[in-house]
Length: 134
Image 1: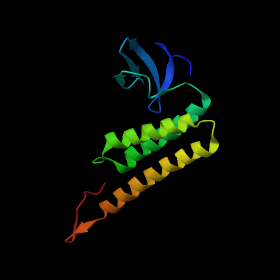
Image 2: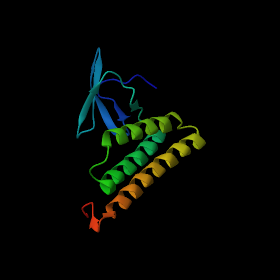
Image 3: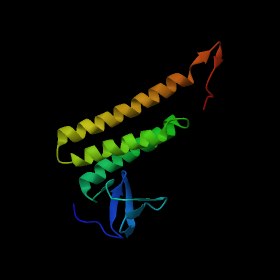
């Protein structure tokens, strides 16, 4: 991967982003909506077509999950799981079998969360629906 510089576009945590600032001990990355700072670019991937396709798929599933599952979930850990699985898929961008395995695991992860949320939404306790209907 080429060395990234201020003004370069990349994928950061599966979203298209730009390197906004680089300091001796840190970087700032932004996507037009939010900015984040950290010590390294370890959650960045280069602007390549295969990475684009992987990132678009992860972003779509993540946004769908956020909309379908809603509030009350452990989003920090879910987000970290997504980022780690995205990084694994990107690291295997040239290995169809491993990349597809990562994509399948991500889709299955989302399905399990949504199914779990749906089963809780219909849960009744002593005749009372415990969770508000949306």
